[in-house]
Image (cartoon, rainbow, N blue to C red; front, side):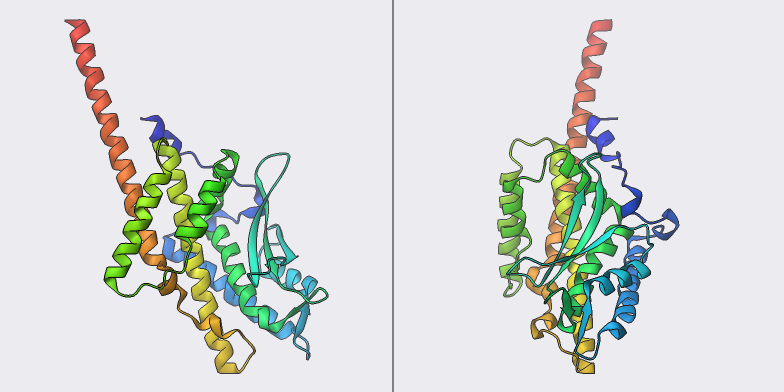
Length: 286
């Protein structure tokens, strides 16, 4: 078996603080994604009644609600959001001793350590990322491998933030084709000089990130519709069809296609090397 294929089969084991039992993550991708989405609904039902008459909850209340919905062994940190651009965020933290992921976070806007009910949909968006990582452990495993291998570089950040995870607002099929062709060219340029296994790490990491964003924005839109129907306060932008704006489905397919191409080329090269080796062996034995 080639070194490339061997590396692709290595699973970077996760700490118990960021994984759930195997019995809960069996089944197809769709089954696991549905289970992750159910966890978001549980948090929604758990936390909605906790807002007081002024429309606030404490950070401690949010933490307790998340802990109740999840296994208490899962390490989730609730933090104040310090990003002036985004209403919330999600982060992955590492142990300085083991290099393994030790916890994930939900970062949310606060006013004197209190969270406004207008942030509820943002909480659910970020919690979707958290449970996606739990029900699809390969997401966090790939992230851990990338971090330990030093693959999260400034160049990759620019590629992902400025070209992959961007709202493109496509205007028809022709515009979509142009956007995807341009993105493919940029990714291929980024890949110059890289071995196949590193290319696959980047392909998989970007794909997993987009998949999680796709479902997080779907969750956001779902609960924005509920908020509108129930006359709860929310941001009107949360009703946007971000799957269409970001072209999540199309970009995920592009990354999958590029991954298949890399694997096909590597297998072809491996077969060619074996054939040449066999020829040389036959010549020496004659």
